[in-house]
Length: 258
View 1 (cartoon, rainbow, N blue to C red):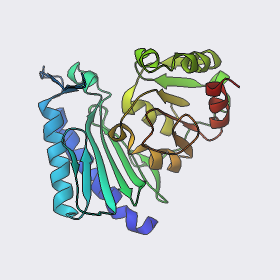
View 2: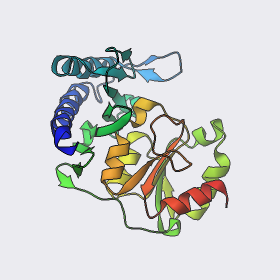
View 3: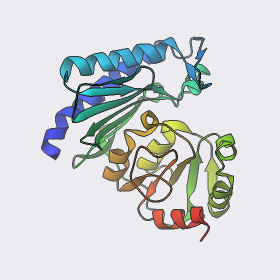
View 4: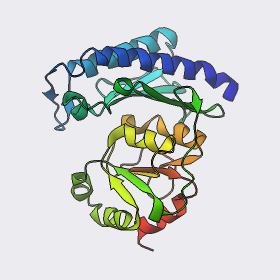
């Protein structure tokens, strides 16, 4: 399997980088957002980037399905391959000139995500992995942190209001009280921080499939875990966390309140 994934990984990295260049043309320019029905934001940069990514996929892999945040599912019969796209993860930050937004691309093969790329254009960072190929940060092999206790762990998280809104405040308080330090960097960059060993745990009480598609292979290949709050590797849960395999048992115990 791994030998066949390298072309997909190279394609996804190049596509994410080029889409990121498109977004940079609008970043910190005072671009005006629109409000979507779910109260989230969208800009012309989101649309242009998704159209660009989908267009490249359709040209190079015409038999593959595509699922994007902005334009939904483009089915190709019973396609075994599905690309999952978030053209700008962190649109609120993007609109406000915060450089932590990301371009996310994942490739699901027969129901399992095997290739993942998270590109952060304004930071010039790219984290990418494919099953069996390793995980790389700007071309350098990476690994999760070796910290093995929450008492020494640096925790990153989404907007703290989300823990209240989605009835996860109790679990959040347990994690916060057990940790060394926390900060609200949020969105995809939090998961990239865990994969690159710069943070020990990322928590998100609510997200969509396109928000997280790249991260199972990225965290797995970095020696870590991405999945739900019960220890299952998945991109379809409504909540997620990323951490090291060493910390995962303690994190799950604290979340459960054991």
